[in-house]
Length: 266
Ligand SMILES: Nc1ncnc2c1ncn2[C@@H]1O[C@H](COP(=O)(O)OP(=O)(O)OP(=O)(O)O)[C@@H](O)[C@H]1O
Image (tube, rainbow, N blue to C red; front, side, top):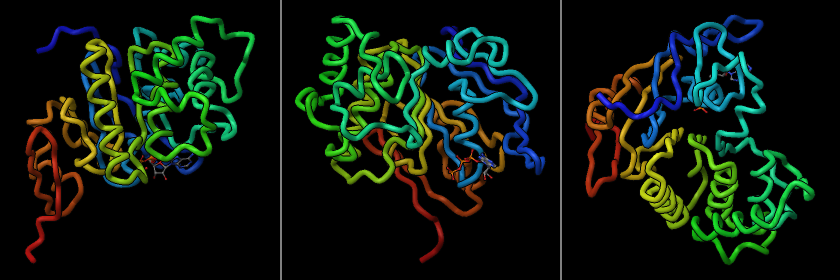
């Protein structure tokens, strides 16, 4: 049993949609601790993004409690809490004319547009350091709009780190990336895990092939319910994924990375 600090604690959480009453999350229990790297998996519509948004203080549960970084979501100013959580989402609006350096800087204020008066020399320098950490130092002056998908993903991760978060949330960060770009982002995530042992991450993804080998834990969701939750050895098994996705799936792990395919007879 780990004794690391609890970063996020989800207890008996349900989310119902208005006005239909659709149950999107159904009595979810989950704990994320410092230094853990979680993969959040499940079929389309299982509730993954909804759960990630609760952790990011981007919404409230209908019942149950969500505590993030020691604060109860719903009792504190969500903007204040959000400013301490790194969030990388495909919904993020980013001005395409802004340079990569400016996009990273906006992470300090959590704004779409830069608030120039808020950024001192230290913040500007930090944005350069984060670009370097994500292996995109040379992109500093390049407009975001002309960067490739993989470069954009790494710029957005650098942006999310501007607030020096204890928790980094990523919603499908590898979506629509070609193979080399995907591998570059996976390498970057792995290096982050090594360089920042206290940082906890949660990544929503559809493909096991996208998980860095630093992934230590996984939560499987199906129709809003937790199907399995624990270490990757316990959870990322053929049996568990078959139950979660509702069709035979074979999982293998090689060289620290995972692969999954349909187990239907050919
Ligand atoms: N704003 C909304 N209004 C109404 N229903 C919503 C809203 N957002 C999500 N839902 C519904 O809640 C359910 C869960 O959605 P969610 O996006 O959390 O699932 P997901 O597991 O992330 O799906 P995907 O893999 O397709 O991205 C779905 O049935 C979806 O249609």
